[in-house]
Image 1 (cartoon, rainbow, N blue to C red):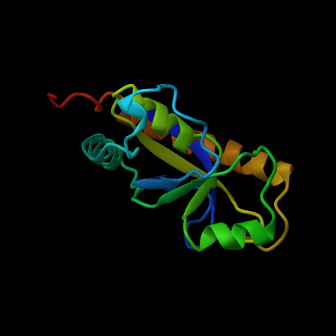
Image 2: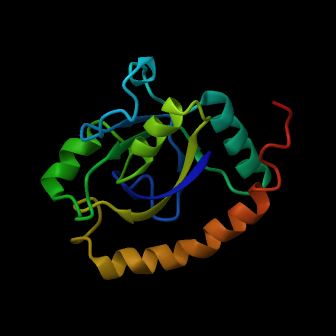
Image 3: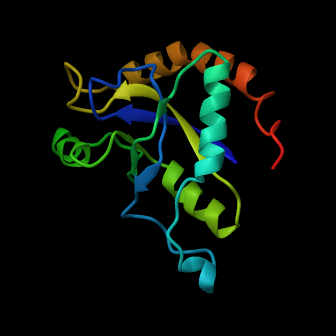
Length: 163
């Protein structure tokens, strides 16, 4: 599985329009396992081999996602406060609402999982002013072409290597 996620950057060094393929996550509000057996007692995570294939395909397609970083999952859909962002930024690179939960379920279903995240905003308190929905929407629209072009180049390459 390849997830495409919209994230907020926790640092101005990872600006709007950046791509990142996280290699770890924090999700304190994760729902319980969908299973009540040994599958629930595993350490979830992104599949390293599949992540590498995704990154290499993206690079061959002409874009260079950041290899690695920590994704912090929050409940949303509200924006986090600047104080929350300062706390989160001490431990993570990007913030979003879904990738970690999806990664856990994919692992329990024994599916390889990687995520490519596009930075659609600087998290509240990272940029010059307060984050607004209008700003987020404008940045998402600006990134849509980047993402569409990347996917057009990448999708034919993925899975081409024998498993």
